[in-house]
Length: 293
Figure (tube, rainbow, N blue to C red):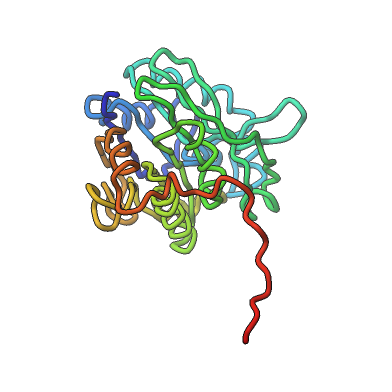
């Protein structure tokens, strides 16, 4: 299998006035990386920077969300056009979209160079999404066919739950893409440590791309913390901390990493430990009280 040239963007939140302005920003970022990477990962809710401009008033969470849901079809078409123009595989982050039953979902498209796409929905909602935005849980984990084999997507908070990623790995995914948006270092570190754990326990690659920067004009994206990074197994043939690539904290820009699935096959066969193989295959018995003698 051919190694994958992966690009991850720490997206600096901007203030586009309309979909065309957002599309121009997206196109500029993708143009910077298109010659250096085959697949590009952007953060969760990066396009929601549009909400303030589209809602046309002072920062208001509900108004921004309504504006984004209404604009979602046009935003998605802009994303597809950029992937086609630069002939790249593009994971452009996530966007809130209306479901047919009236719910609003947080959806992550993976777009092929010809503009075709498939979605991974976010399953687990943060308190902000559930209590203040009313975003509903979406469909369960999927895997995506690509020229580099099967990949998975685990949107932000979903990566903190081992079974979501494990289901994708057991279905054949060797790389998990994690678009994320966090407003504190507590939040980002939960994602970071979770992704490191998912890479360790599954002996796979996990890539993270965050929103970064201050945006006081946006109710939803006012503060954004994190760094772009790629994690791998913590074992022979890999860095001692499992960190394969990373950007500076809160610094916008691209991080690039070449990922070879053959390295995973080797560590799963010859590692000092065999986490991928040793994952419990059946239900774990509930703990019983220990008896002291």
